[in-house]
Image (cartoon, one colour):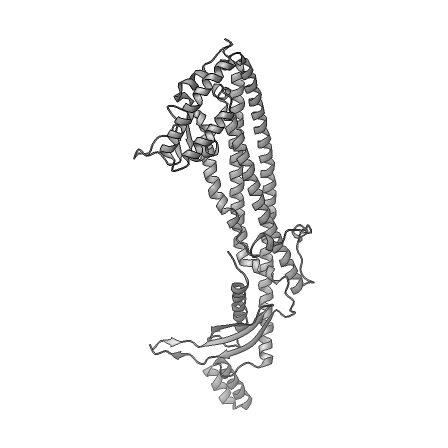
Length: 460
């Protein structure tokens, strides 16, 4: 600046001195911008915002691409789950046929079995409730009532041929069906949400630059009538990951419970401080494995695992009125094979469900990241103004000065702008960037955009 003054002094030009005075006044915020100069700042700021909108639209297109890939994976998971479910149901059907054939073998001692069963049931209830109440925090009364109802509806052949495993598998199948249905509903919400954000962003793109905008055919806005995003969410910038977070915790517990239910040969021992895990009941030496409190509450038939502690129940298991020893023959072997296969497919189904949910959780995380950066552009779908950015006023507060503590305090510039359809936005920018600097328009436009996001977009 000093060199410029020397050169101008040397020339002695009045015009040059006038120009210098203007520059100094602008730099020191003595001279405020005219209406024409405000308009020029607005034009430059709008060019900057056009670029930001294009970047945001590209980001939303990336969201659509992520969802497209997720849809392909979703189809693969659904096909695999359906196939596994059919295989499991076929195995259970075979097991039920073998069970019916075994029961027919011992019809000759039906009365004896029923008599023993009536003496077996109260012992089973007492034993199960006793062990449940020792380990589980609450619910023993409910378990007792549920078990009594189950035992009254159960045939003594369930004790004789270990048939409660079929009941367990069928109840687990019902839980799996509900879990899958819940996942599908959440996935549909996520898919519809992305579709709506994308569709609104394409409308915004048409408003801003119709001739030059292009997107691939597979990314075209959906033509099907999607549910309104406002019906799905409280606002259009919902946290996608929250759809799956509660389910992740719930499914971990359910999958763990199912693993212990199927793990009939594993030993569950007390901890070093001799306290059994609150949620695990040891059934050995009386039963044949371990169960969880949740499992028993969900399926009281699991209490039949305590049959070896009741003498009358043990007698049922050793009945052989026909003299053919059916429990040592091929029918029993076929039943065990069918049950093992059904349990294997049940575990496989659970594994697929868990992987599917984890993938949806990870996908929602990526979508949230992109949405927080770029989803704001979808709010411009209904923007009706031709100009998207207008600087209404620029007021400088003065030179850099020292505060009472002796520290230098940089002056600030107060700015008022109109952005999109929003009310006027007022804020300050650092005073070290004069309004004559080309960077000033970019700084103001970015600050206005940041404020617009804060006031117009609610991210949960």
